[in-house]
Length: 295
Image (cartoon, rainbow, N blue to C red; front, top):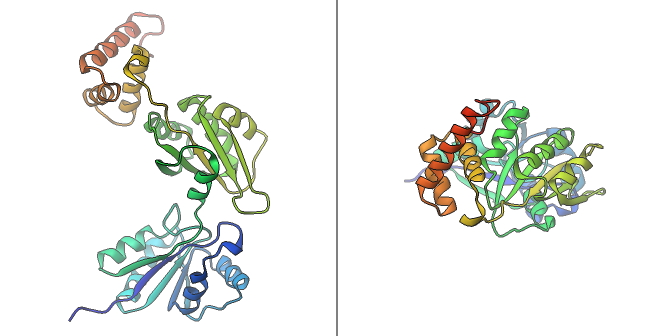
């Protein structure tokens, strides 16, 4: 006989307007054996707004105790409990607590399901006015300036639309870094306080958005950035080829692999890219300020 285990339910919660709560959310909150919440105070506010009461045990499950609490919840699931996981807003495990618990449950062959709910990622993407057929979610960028630039350089040539979360007090620095790496003319949209009273979507080139953000921005922020433009071989000069190789090297690729990848992207022979890299290196070594060039 196969063992009978419980079910882990990931429940999406409103990102702003409580009226967006999916109907199943109230039912699951009332019937779960255990409700694991990122913030139990926020959970109480949610249940009051929905006009319901939880009957199961309520426990906290946030970044600081994920590792310690996951085994306890898995044990309950193995014993047959129905565990509901909710975060402060949106879908658990998407830049929120939940991934560790899902991975542990899957490893134990425990059923994992979801109550679909609002998503800041998809909402911002739809409102941005930028291409939505293909996109990448990049979450939060590193706080340190150097690490942030490095992460952005990794996707400098990504053609899919990019979606980021950001804290309001770091938005101006992030947009300035994006303008530096992606180009000041790259289109973007800053989505603020989605579905809330003061919802705002600010669209424009990254350079203009960076200047706008210097005045200070409040609220929950999602940034959507247009993907890199498609460029054919004729549009890539030697300097651009060298820049692309440098970006890949800084991301950890060996030079040989970086040259091969850039050649494939540009539809050029590897030798042509190699020659451009060597020429740049030689020019850098012989010119003023030698040793500080691209390669």
